[in-house]
Length: 90
Image (tube, rainbow, N blue to C red):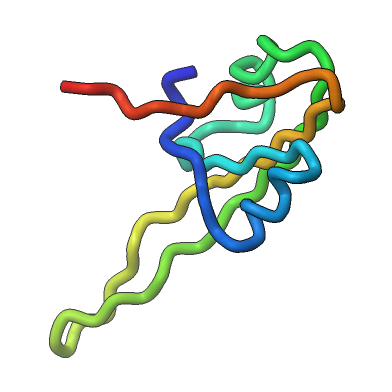
């Protein structure tokens, strides 16, 4: 599960927690099948992933952008739960 970067806590994702749907960002190069292999630890789940565009950033006359990233939403059955994700300490 090294490809999972961090959990996302927005207004929408907090509302989804009540429905047993967990949201997190993963590496942008990851494919849906790789993400499914990471999540195979939980027996009963349904997964949705989508790629979000980077935001435009201007530095003087030059227009740049931030990195693209991929977000996954995992829906679990009512009898299962996921422990909170923790950051690695260095």
